[in-house]
Image (cartoon, rainbow over all chains, first blue to last red; front, side):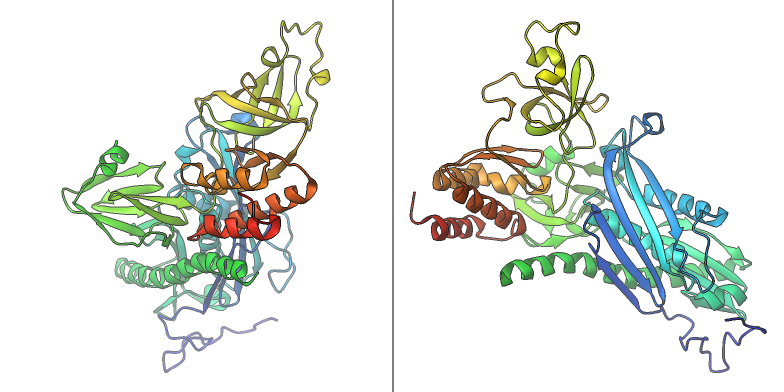
Length: 247
Length: 250
């Protein structure tokens, strides 16, 4: 699908392209423990964005010289599947994917008690199954949930959410179209319980005031995603109990 | 240590969660009424950390409250060796003077040849003739300090190569449940099935049973314990299961 001219991102009655209000999230769906072979896994959906994360470890990391004598090394791979976009994406890691792997790794390093497992490696794989904007934020949420599912001690979950600016209006959780034609995109990773920011990027231009308001919006949204995430972690075990009961 | 301080009755700890409640990383478990801690204090053994005047969980797990001390029992965990742990391992590799043993941990255990072969001489003895890749061994962690890989020993009563019986793979986080409080579950399993059982703390159970039927029942009982590990009245349930399958034996 090609779009010849810029679409109307904000209608006169302050509705966005997909009918959302400026401070409205897309529907968030989260499932934990979706993969059998991984130690921990999670599937996170922000609207049409679908991201799968798998965690292996802590396990023996090779080559040995890459390991740290004081803590576990996090190895994060953010990757977009070749079918995740409307036009085929080359499966080779791009510049962008290498960068996102790095920022997500740094965000996760802030929440993992990695000193408990010196000389080991924790592998985090993030696969974008379908991209519609906000894949790094959904990826971060999925990765932190997969880590929790793997039983790795964490300070908190990390919740990703993006704030953007389209037609001069700050909007929450921007989708592909808004990202492409908007004026700014600000992905934020938040540890809601600690009230800390673990990931912060900004593409485009925002004023100081707008960043402040944007962060407020992000924190509010993170709180609601956090609830869904916690529910998902809880549900995995409730399901387990019910399965056992029915046997 | 904070862990010790918390285990002594502290009336200033206001607990916000119920016993056996499922909690997640970052869930607030209790509030300390008193001076607040400025820096984050982590108590890895209890799976809690303290920040400000609040106690948080660091894993997905079940709350355990004992004498106003709070801890979280994780639902998933990795085995980290400790000195004197009895473990079951699989030989994964060997060099001229030592075996490398997979003990289901991020750290591979080393079993020195001199530990198994008396008067070991690398020029004379071939390790393959004693323990081959894929062999199971019951061993004890002799040394482990996190800076070097754990050293295993097979010197001790009942330790050594596993030549009979059956090894059952379980999750390391469920080992405590298979043993039970003061060994209650372990005693139940051994007395009712008449099997010889050794629980390796790394998540392997070795069992030698009178016959295959009993072994099958034992495996199913262990799977039951694993699945229902976080539920109340498990010992009773396992007991009734064993009675139903094996008839009334005590």
